[in-house]
Length: 239
Image: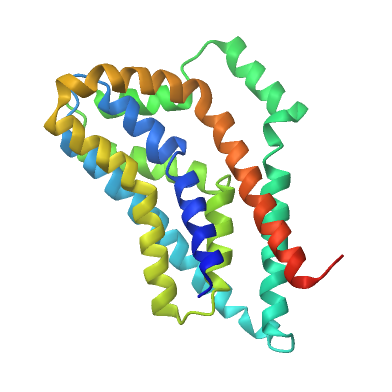
């Protein structure tokens, strides 16, 4: 596998690791003084298994369509897929600036109701919440986010066209999902070891993430899309 593809996957995994489901919600929960570490670990395990299972299903589905590519030059087919993925990521990065996204944000602000992440965090830290509640919140976060997680979908396209056999693709997908969950796991370990030191920093981080994480993620998506697009154009010799 080319080093450029691995670097692209690493970048996409790091972007995915800062999403609402994989980092923002865990940070908000970890900042709560009464939360149990087991709940956070169960949440991260559930959402990781969900993304791995979804990835397996999509990769197998893509493999079933591989016959459609048999008459094409394989290298150029991969390059065209990279070009489309890059163009999609770059175009999608402008979504927050569209009038539809701004109108939806204005409606949520006018309603004054707790946002989705606030409701999920409340369910996770509620006294007496059950394991089924934690699993349900993690699955809901994964289901709602999956369709809009452009880096994850782009990464699956790169894995599917990597040239690796299915076991290699599944191993790469498992590593990708592990990187997605890694920041949350590191913060969980730090909270268990040094809560007094970490608590004020978690509170500041949670405030900063809620305010800026969305904007930063869209910028990273755009930059990764541009990199993939330029790389594919160079390979194809479009210009």
